[in-house]
Amino acid sequence: MSRGCLPEKVRVSIGSAAVLELTRCRLDARPTTIYLLTYHRGRCLANCGFCPQAKGSEGRADMLSRVTWPPFPTGRVISTIRDAFRGGVVQRVCVQALNYPTVFEDILSLVKGIQSRVEAPISVCCQPLNRGKLEWLKEAGLERICIPLDAANEKVFDMVKGSAAGGPYMWEEQCRVLEEAVEVFGRNRVTTHLIAGLGEKEREMVQTIQWCTDSGVYPGMFAFTPIPGTALENRPQPPLGSYRRIQTAHHLITRGKTRLERMTFDGDGCLVDFGVPKEQLKKAVRSGTSFLTSGCPGCNRPYYNEKPGGPLYNYPRQPLPAEMAEIEKQMSPLVVR
Image 1 (cartoon, one colour):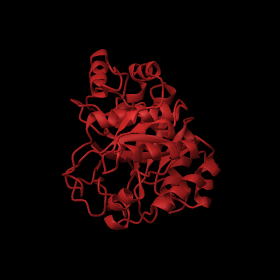
Image 2: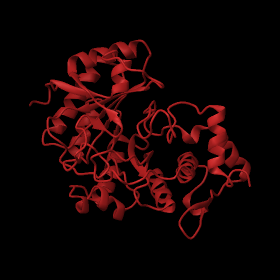
Image 3: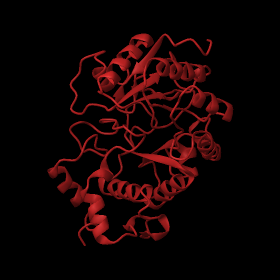
């Protein structure tokens, strides 16, 4: 397929499809980004243990994390995106990609096709690409790129998406491409994803958050979510208290309020002090901002790693007063002591 030809179909997250009026479904929280997924008849060439799209997965082929992604004609989708942006309904388009031989051609043509019709910031989340392809995407109008690390360290990475998992990815290569992407797109125009609860210690996750921030890469935080049919379907989600500590550390580090070296961890690698004055910590927690979905600007990903009935790991909107009271209980005694 030539790079100028739009793919016939593209998948759209069910929430985004509802916002675009491509389908009907109840929305407890409206997505503020339109999430697309490249259409491919087969499964992904990668074998990430948490992903229903993995080549070894027995899960539903129309799912990514907890979300279903029905396919629609690409031209129709782009037309509805244009209308949604004209109406001020959404803030960004995010194109996510499986790994298959012609995926780059599909990504590039989608970026060009959207950019030529819609004045919207576009993000792409995909496997590592060489420098030439990164530059092509930037020239095509791509604003931000995401290369997901997912894991907090090399050992966990290898177990869940590297050679031990039967996947094609390597930790050092993933980190190198992130650094190269920063050279191409600029600092804070590159994102990665980190998933808490894959077997890392809190200290290891915070260390990787600090590395990303120092490197000019913004780390989006997610909680591991077990999906039926995946290799990790029997693994539990991380404890909420642990995830709240990591979210708070993420908030403070990415805003330059503290650093890993100022923090204190116990013998199990759990956070016991954030390295900021107590009043500053209380203010950061009680703002609620730490617990919102983190990622590209305008991204809220409703219910990507939790059920609408809760418990919510990433809030797609400002937590309600009762929810903030519960969060403070989960954070205690760090907040109140």
